[in-house]
Image (cartoon, rainbow, N blue to C red; front, side, top):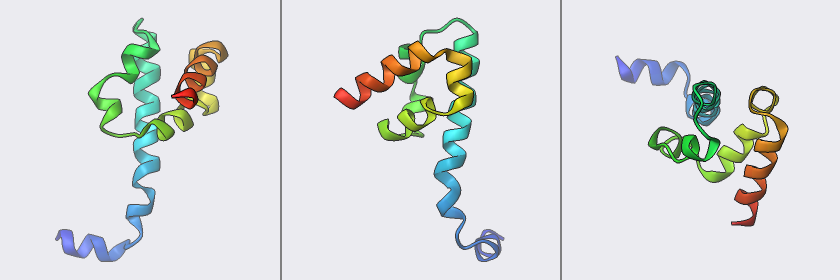
Amino acid sequence: MAEKSRWRNPLSFLFADRRDEKQVAVYIVREHKRGRSLDDILDDPYVRNRCSEKDVARVLESPEVIRELGNDIVAEKIESIESA
């Protein structure tokens, strides 16, 4: 059965990263609303196992995440990622 689904969409692997980024964005916003700091959230294995640092920077630049977390927090984190 898995063999058959792979043939239906042989390019599905190209979209896996974007799907992971979307799920990580939802996770970051949810955990932030629960009162956790952004640094703690980004240290979670859930985030680290699904996204590279560049992927995390891209997630943090998305308008939805910026709106939810605030420009200051996101700008500060992107700056620290780029300087590392």
